[in-house]
Length: 568
Ligand code: B12
Ligand code: SF4
Image 1 (cartoon, rainbow, N blue to C red):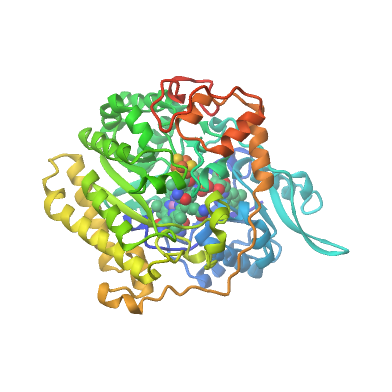
Image 2: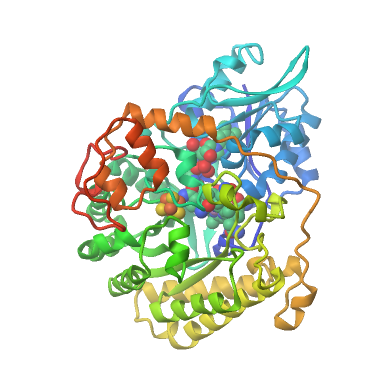
């Protein structure tokens, strides 16, 4: 049974300007497949190696795999569909499998527009893929495919073709049962420009207990689960000793929510001396930083150098729309605390909703200067069709060309300006912010790792600026304010929206919560869980929280409890 996993060759000038990143999905799936006895496996990273369709065709032809598995997020969906089309053309007997978030929720549309895809794996891939591969190995594909949970496929019946989804598979409760096989990656390709070293993306926790309205992640992973922090440190030790990584980011949505485990993780890194060898970064929430003020020096000592904070907005109204349940004043405080602890802090703003104006964009710049983060990031609001915010505003979305759903292309047109004006103003914020930082901040930011890191980030920015990759500026033809009238986003306006399939998914999530109902309600509410979660909890018959706090920092947070849902 020969399996070929492929990461599609999709690029957009956002986070990837910091270097080449190893696709974690492939390592985690490969580890599980090998543990189940399927070791004839190869991985092709078409993105990092910038592999053309023709070259990919030759590779697949030479391999003649039994199964080709490809990943997709929303923006890479068309590239992923093309990868599997090529696979089908050159190896017609191969079973083509697509996984990842976009296909999970948009399987109807994907299977309709790409009928060469034999099946979609919905949700977390490890267990479902093993079940699928076993079925194929036993010669029971496609006859018994209904028996595998978590699949979607097209079935040809007498009445015609019909798209079928089998019941959603349960989430993987014991994340420690998964061991990544990082050995399938070509390690010398994965370099992090700011530190000029190899980079990895291990995964410590899956899911998020919050329900921000613009975000798809909490919905995708359903319940929140955490690995044994010591096992994660073992993995990092291997990544350091065997693959020579010098930096990693945790792939997690929110690794700090369980403070007790996060502290164990930090202490184990220190005990093993890994903190002296490897620096790392995380995404997290403002509320956790405020809660953990006293632990920030420990986090820094453990090697944490970069925290990307979901500050999201400069206006409280917008935070409320996002169901973020944080306060503007919290943002400033969290940034200051991180900087005081010697940690590089990045503030993220989401811009480009329909009510964005020149003034609101200016306000985000003013806030970025006033709050004083080391790095700031203005992401274009991207209406993932499976999010609650999208459901509320879908009448106003005009562009369904998912290739451009990438945080750097303005998908929404604000009422008060056109898209190129929006891009220009965002660039104006970047120019002013980083000019100030480059001249007055980074060169004087002490002597240690923080300064080195910041100068490295500046190098990555400059490199992508010169190459015109930053924000896809080269592709859209933006050369500065004078060129804004000529900008062309190359939208394919012929693309139409199809409904996302989330209802069975939400029902499955609710069921899994019912099975393990004791989400510490104080934690959920204290950290900003919205109605969706609360409904699930109430439906489960659990007791409602006595106090619903607007933002984090409650004494009963998950950090203090081990039997919290997702705490282990
Ligand atoms: C690390 C990361 C990156 C890295 C590395 C990407 C890479 N090479 O893999 C970098 C920095 C390059 C990056 C870039 C971008 N990213 Co990014 N990234 C992430 C992050 C933080 C973690 C992803 C990860 O590794 N997760 C861990 C693995 C194990 O999970 P997974 O990939 O989902 O895989 C599991 C399942 O999906 C499934 N599965 C996945 N693929 C397959 C395939 C098969 C065959 C099967 C069976 C199963 C399966 O099984 C896996 C194991 O359970 C996520 C946010 C998050 N916390 O998840 C955003 C995220 C994936 N990124 C996102 C985006 C939009 C982008 C960019 C477009 C942004 C930009 N303009 O720079 C680019 C696109 C780059 C590209 N071509 O893929 C969005 C996607 C949203 C969406 N709805 O599509 C996310 C979710 C962030 C967000 N806030 O919304 N990203
Ligand atoms: S905190 Fe909000 S934005 Fe971050 S992963 Fe959770 S739901 Fe998404």
